[in-house]
Image (tube, rainbow, N blue to C red; front, side):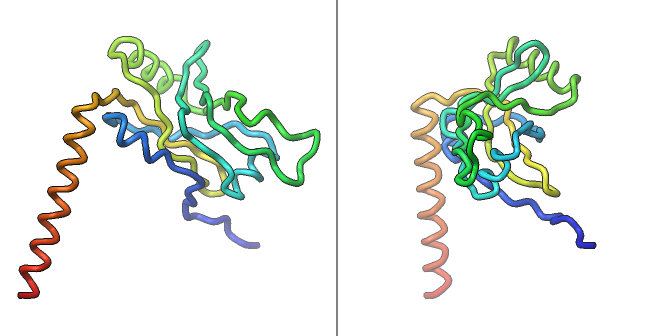
Length: 157
């Protein structure tokens, strides 16, 4: 029959994470979901704002991720903010646990997407930025944009 979709399809992104945190490493993890949650995700009804990863009892969970209730679901709809279990190898989880404890890093989800029909989360090991770091990043971005604009004008003269 037909082949499963090989391409990845992004459901939602946490754009603010790259502004608020320094990203050190990224990891891919599967998400344990119920049927109506998957259907709602396929419709793009998810939000990563203020969500974070937490390690409890050797398992990793995504807290505060909001998946809107499925429209055609009834009693089978789950709590939109329930903790979602992430599926990773035990060694990876223990490595992340050590780094979050020792170095004071945070687990931040960057995006949720479908890969070969499976829901995945891109999780980042990150450290928080200070206000002056954010201002510097915005200034650098503006300077780069101005420089590119000047170069473009130079070419047409």
